[in-house]
Length: 126
Image (cartoon, rainbow, N blue to C red; front, side):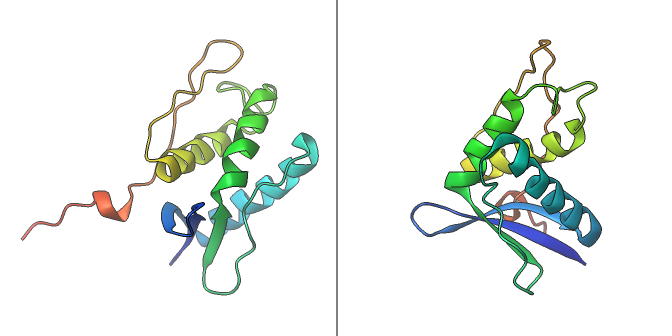
């Protein structure tokens, strides 16, 4: 059983961002809260209200990640303290924005984005 991250868009609609295992979801959320102290911005991810889902304020999460990414040493694609976290956060942004992004660190290395397939992308066969 997993835990979903759902983005709340400015118009109030919802958009799938990710579906992590329970432990990975908790770790992702805990790291985001920790990073708030370093970048001085709210992450925009709300606590799980008990329905195995974190809701993300998309207007906060995107600039939060952009600030985290700009810090370099935190998320450098190779050797950054939190490069693994950044790969999933970048994938969540792609699912929220419905656009692919290229994140290149201060050393010119591209981040390998880890994006969960959105439910609307899953093709059913009959």
